[in-house]
Each structure stands twice: as C-alpha cells, then as structure tokens.
Length: 185
Image (cartoon, rainbow, N blue to C red):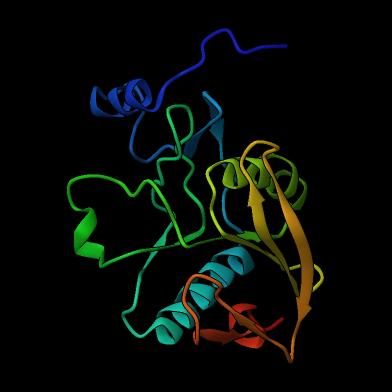
C-alpha cells in the first residue's frame, strides 16, 4: 500500500521548523515516509558512543563524525543514521545538512532487519560507498560495499568479527579495530 502523502525533504523540514514535528520526536524521513525510531537501550547507546569514539580516533580529523544527525539523501530521504562519516569538518555543516557520506554506520540490537532491508537500499541508491551494521546480538559487523544506484543494493556484503580490523574505503590508510566498534557485553 502506498503512503497517503509522500513527503519531500523540504516539506519534512518545514514540519519541524513550524513545530508540527517536535525536534525531540525520534523520527526520520525514509523514501518520503515519516518513520518513528525506537528508543535506545543502554547497550545500543553504548554501541553508538563506542563506534563514534573509535572512528574519531582513527580518522584523526580527516573527516567529520556525526552521531544521529540528519543526512539528506535525495528529495525524499533524510535518515538520521547512528553514525555518518562525512567529508570536511563539523563546522562545514552549520548551514545545511550533508548530502553525502563516506561511511554510514547503524548499530543494531533489535533493528537488524530494518537496517538490512530498508536502510541498505536507501544508502546504496545514494551511492554511500560503505555501510556498516554493528550487530550487537552477534558481536559482528556486516560490511556493505560497492553500491549499485540503479538496483538500490550493495554488490559486496561481508562480515567481520572481534580481533579483525576494518579499513575505510574512502580514506586509504584509515582502519579501526572491530573490538573498538562493539561495546563489551
């Protein structure tokens, strides 16, 4: 069933500016549909913090790390990924949200299916070169690479586990230990 109203990013932003949607509401715009986001469990919150910190340390200022902030991906999607690594500095985005990312990370405790089936196609269509899902239930990271914009999917999906390192494709020489990305149990 098609949504009754398909919102554009512009119209969605106006709803926030006009107070129709509170900035405190945990929602995001996916394919023109305003979607509610589940509250964070303590482990999910720890996962976001661990991964964000590990990426900041690994990047050493070569890119900005944004946590749970809007990423505009075309006219109908404005997701708020758990983490987005974007070009430049945080200050570069004072006036407008980024429209591209070098890497997007979602931390999944109960959202694994949605992160695979809903978010991955959106990120692939937007040509995000790399997408990681930190799977807290199985202590592993699913790594999606080689986006195909036309098919809205990634051509390569691999899994990494504790004890391994992940290299960021968009930033050669930058790698991070999987152990640093996944919080301890």
